[in-house]
Length: 138
Image 1 (cartoon, helix red, strand yellow):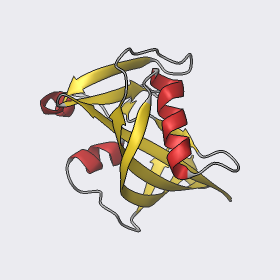
Image 2: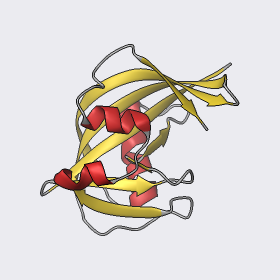
Image 3: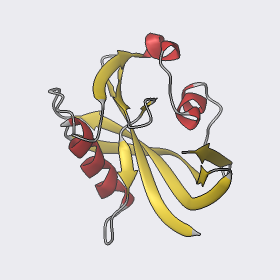
């Protein structure tokens, strides 16, 4: 099974959270794969900018966990995921071609959005710095 390092970023501006709607039609935090010779911190700054047009700086790491991507009930990719808190340095949104939507959402409105399960768990306070294993069917 392949193994990759992965990052997600929590970007907050005036009580609003930056969300992206990805190819599977659910909302998530911006992020993606860590490239060769790139730190987790460099990767999340790059990924947030590529997906949303927002330049950021890392404030701190919030949590890390392991996730397995599944296809037809079989794991095919193990992800070591780090979630970071980031400060936005600009506010103009520019959507990447592989992202369906980018938007700022007030924190009180988050329950109204169909989000990836582990992102929902994070906002509910159920995903912390843990070795919890999450299985995500794609």
